[in-house]
Image (cartoon, rainbow, N blue to C red; front, side, top):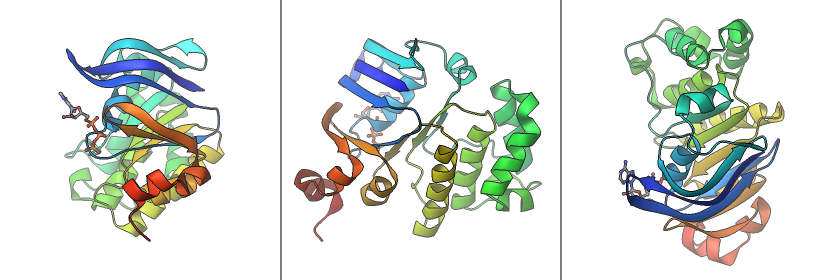
Length: 235
Ligand code: ATP
């Protein structure tokens, strides 16, 4: 279980989030929705130790995780796949995967995790020796997710994985998320692609101007008038 309680956070003195409370229960997929600038990335970064926490608390597995260094959180199993992927562009696909295992100190599990991520994304085995910069957008997103999985995460945070992807490539990512979650890993996923993510998620939260404006079971949100008007378009 990942829990965020009354969190106020931002960048230096700038406050972006105001009293955000949210939880990602064991084994669940939780969607974080909201327009551009609502604060989704900031919340992801705050949980991962990459933003300034002004007030409130974060815990993972019932243990405090507020204001810890990002690398400490990674070692505790909390891994963020950032928006924009941030791959090592001039390293090969395989080297990027090695870095994922190395950063978290999980070198021992290397070959087991490598087989797992290559079964999720066979293209990464075919392209093992290619520079990351030469992959397509969809393949880069697969590699970013695969690199995160190399650290054997216990909690996975995905920040807008659909960005720049074709519907088909995004579908591949969502299938992988379903399989990862099937192994019991809770996933928090920020998305603007509301409809597709709510079909996958168990629960969703809508952020507006740094506050939770709406929360509920994914199927309830899909049918919610306010959400339909603001984010799903008329149909
Ligand atoms: P998007 O979908 O566009 O990524 P978002 O919901 O993820 O939007 P954030 O990126 O969290 O929103 O941005 C929330 C607010 O924080 C915005 O007003 C933004 O200008 C501000 N902000 C984001 N990053 C920084 C930063 N590094 N320093 C200062 N302010 C920032």
